[in-house]
Image (cartoon, rainbow, N blue to C red; front, side, top):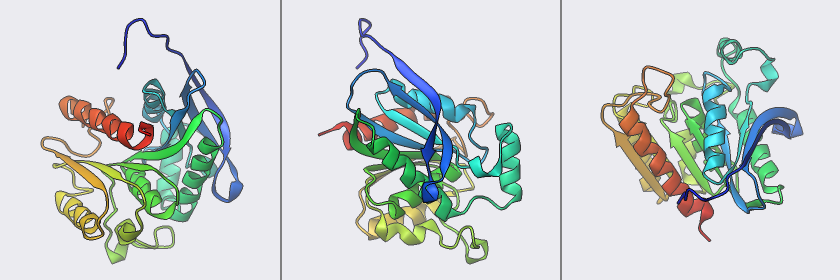
Length: 253
């Protein structure tokens, strides 16, 4: 709990980190000053790209006591504004799941290598990043927590599978190895409430440790304060639930 006489300090900067196949990519990193030990969080950015909202979110996690790392999953597509790079990625059909999972695993390993990290690492993602957060929870051994915010296309039709997305993430549900928190808007269409039902049913079937919260009056991206879909009461409650969940899974002994 914050007290007004506390000292606060934060380091935030762009770094290089080893991603998929040990290829160096850039990332935004923020952490509290001090020896820690701090838990680690990997932030998985959304389809609109490695943008200002994700840099703000990285600093928000650092403010709450986490070593937070936001890799640029679009690094290999070249550089420019986040909007221009995201448009190129969309035109190319997205990034391969295998590559993204490798980048997430690299980010987890990077955080664990830092002397001031307590050894526990979770993932957080929104939109397509929420999908990848769930996928990483199933495919990357050793994660300690998963926060999936309105992950679209966790449930996929056969027709939507391709070389980049060969398996629907929901089909890996049995392999989920970390507790998961899911936040969803009931006015969303990707994922729709029916898809969230299917997602939850699979987790329940396999006996997974999960916590889902669904918000009336909220659609896709209701955390994004810079967009018209922002819903203030739902977003504030959602952030509170995220930090309560991570307190349990990453900070508790």
